[in-house]
Length: 403
Image (cartoon, rainbow, N blue to C red; front, side, top):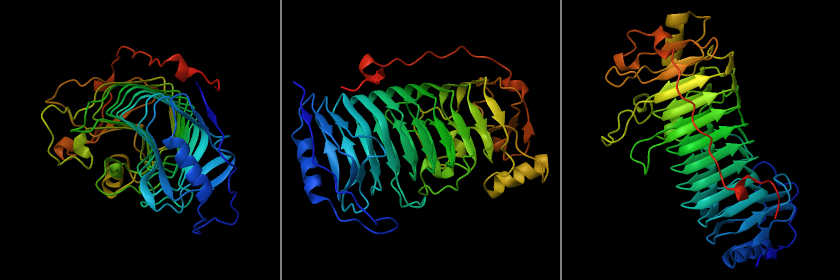
């Protein structure tokens, strides 16, 4: 039997902007923690309108629970004064729905969902409200090792790693969402069968990333990125040194790293100052000198770009090496082509990196040979691949109806 748990009204804060730490709303915090602890499958836990100041992280371990606010701009859980907990909210229950609220200014990740099946996140905002800095939490929305994931209508701002990140997961849809002022706007890592569409990624270091990293629980495969707007992702990189995203140059639009079977189509990708599209192997990332098992394939293969609308960008690449390469090949006032490829190949094999976008020249940076033969070379990329299939989620996740 479904229970609707109506929690008390919020403590609405005034004058707590800037660096001021608001007073903890102790009564509401205790009420919410108790509701999460005592929850039963089918419960709906409500977050009323207002700003609720909390100083301790929350956790939900029960299957089949919904946490629902009155809107991402109305029901706000503020962790600006957080003194305990690694996240704002951590979820380990299956078939959980999070909708219509916001999580702000956590010490670590805003919302982490770990090792679950059935994740629905609708109209949820995560944000670090101050300046973009390395001390911000790493991830906004962070499902990892999950299955059947829907992120719909979310907003992610200010993460020092990725605003919307799905890692080591299966069967994923990220749609209708906005990521801005993060290092990585939207990142799909070591995930199988993901659709990323109808999103906006702007003012990040990198807009949309599809990464495959070594020594994780599974390799990634079969990711579609389509009908997104990816523009002006020129923010300086403020990621933690040594992390994969710390190697992303400011001004990166769509970045594919060491991932196989990716289809990128029907996107508007423009005005990303290093390059609108970057294709790389693990050898040109921060992990390039690391050892990894023989089972890991470091080369991106079977990538298919078609029907994308590309414009601008490439005129002010980030970092001395990229600036020097741009000037050497294209002149002081020139610009990189729309596609920048690091040039690493698997023993000379045809990796089937197919570029069918109008005007999308490919710049081979030839990093495997210390950039001795940097060049524009489109011929190897004049190919076509079969279309990937649509990711299908259950009816309970695809409906917008409220219970």
